[in-house]
Image 1 (cartoon, rainbow, N blue to C red):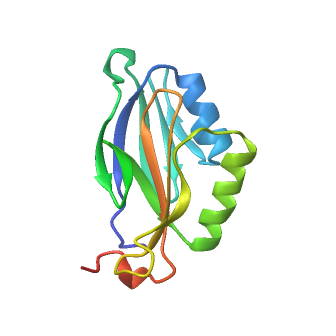
Image 2 (cartoon, rainbow, N blue to C red):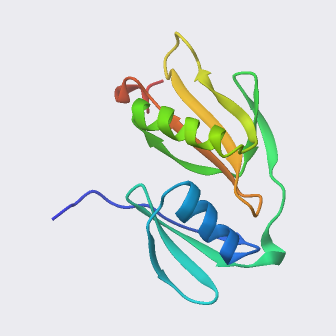
Length: 140
């Protein structure tokens, strides 16, 4: 039995069909249970739930991080570098508009990481990261 805690996130979307196409289709997240008001997705081993709440979707604010304007709030996942590269290419091929293009942040410093930011169809910001050295995830 897996004893690693799993993350759960519920977030608003304006259109469940668009969420299904984005998370299930483009990102390849298997769909779990659903209703006419929400959809569960397996987001790289974690549970995210798109809830139909059109009035709740709002544009993000931004904070400066290593020269980028990072949208807040955002959510995401840390992948292996190989998975990150494959996903970046899939998103480019699908002509996803990046808020922050795929690149390496904090290069040569503690916490060096690959990152990319983009929006789902409801305007929710996602960050996908990767580290060559996972010991750097919480390094300071």
